[in-house]
Amino acid sequence: MSGLEPFRRRLDFLDGEIARLLGERFDVCRQVAHHKREHNIPMMQPERVVEVRERYLARGAEVNLPPDFTAALFELLIGATCKLEDELIAEPTAAEAEASER
Image 1 (cartoon, rainbow, N blue to C red):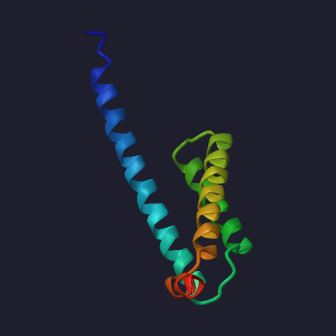
Image 2: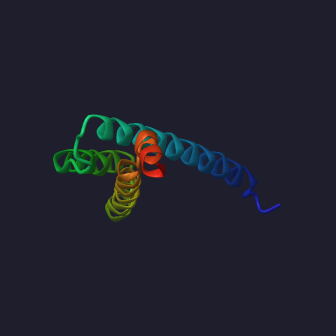
């Protein structure tokens, strides 16, 4: 009745897409963590963090997002994905877990 329903439907759809894309991003980060672990690559790659942060800020500016929002979103994402990578890299492998049970 207020005329907001079409906007709300669009926002609901976009929220679903954002969640789907974030899930996909986290899946890729899980794959990265396993690759780093298998190849003994350090979890933290500072130059990559700088590169991704700069790209986030530039893309946010291109689509008219407030810079403080874009920076905060990046920090939240990088913090969560670094934590995820740390946890996955630190997990014992199946062989390690089996050996510790003996």
